[in-house]
Image (cartoon, rainbow, N blue to C red; front, top):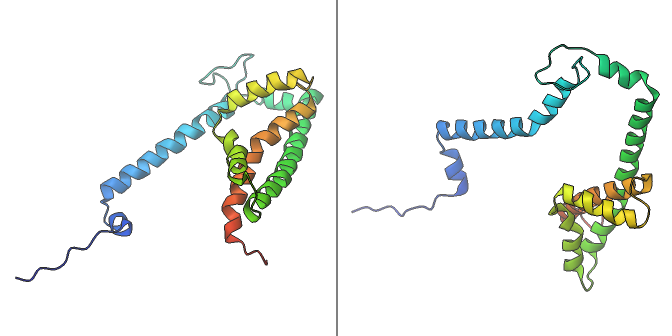
Length: 178
C-alpha cells in the first residue's frame, strides 16, 4: 500500500482554495462595513442641501442656501479658518511630541519603558466621548475649558497616541544608520 504523508494546510492554501461563494460573502461583508461607516457622513452631506429652516431627511427641497450662508457670512468663514488653524497646529505639535516619544521608547532602554509605552497608548482604549468629558472637567479647574489652548491640548491628546503607535510600528523597520 502506498500512503502519501498528509501535508498540513497552510494559511495560504486555505485562502487559495476558498470557494467563490465565501469570497463573495467576505466582499459583501466588507461592503456592508464600509456603508455602515460612511452612511452618517453621506446623510449629513445630503441634509446640508436642505432648503428648509430645520433638518429633514429625506430632503424635501434641494438648495444651496446653507452653503451660500457658510461662504457669505464672516462668522462661518472665521470659524472655518480657526478650525483649520487648530487642526494644523495640533497636528504639527502631536507629530513632534509623538515622534520624540516614539524615538525615546524605541531606541533607549530605561526603567519604566514598557509602562510608558502602554501609558502613551492608553487614550486609544478610552472612548472619545469619555475623554472629551474628562478633559472638559479637568480644564475647567484651570480656566481652560472653551479656550483655544484647551482645544489645542485636547486635540493633541487625541492625536498623540496614534503618532506614537505609528512610530513604534515603523521604527523597527528603519535602520539606525539611515
